[in-house]
Length: 268
Image 1 (cartoon, rainbow, N blue to C red):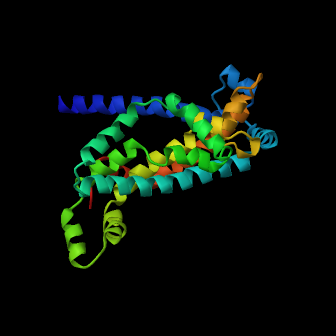
Image 2: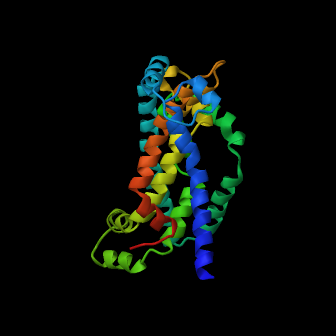
Image 3: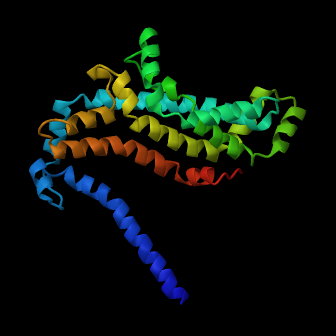
């Protein structure tokens, strides 16, 4: 009975894996075929990869878009990790009277849809002369209530004895944070880095509004412009999607072990 149960579980996992991987396999196959072959449903590798890549480079500023996405995602991720971890550390470690009320207000901000603040944000950045810059994309989400909450919850498992030992050794609060807390919470930082990087890399709506010239566009905006044309070339679109997807896939696999530990809240 146990063997049948285990076989059923494995069969279900295999089917789930096939269903999950099928879009990625289709994407890889599609980038080697022409648009007409993709429309016809051809499910085998073709010989149009070089043509699709050449057309994509001719039609778009792919290098500039890749660089723009990289700058926004990397700088935004680093800033978000530092600021959110400082806030989560402070909320959990230090005790003040208004801490719970402030944190409650912070959690309420998660219920506000982005559409409600989109126009005020646009007016504010426009008046500050910061539209069409990476800062306009990074600053609105440089700290989020979810990321602060994430660090705060993981800090609950942080051993307070390390802080006490550091204070006995004469470390200040900033040194405690950078030399004791940050190295100990590496899995949490890895999990937060993957989530934040993917959010910045795949961000679409606000960059579409804030980045107004072609040389400032990011990869998701390039893919969207290709797909919204009157006669879209699906082979070119598949190549653009693969280029857009690869960085997030690589980062996830590089930090996979730490990501699992961080999501489970484990601290070593």
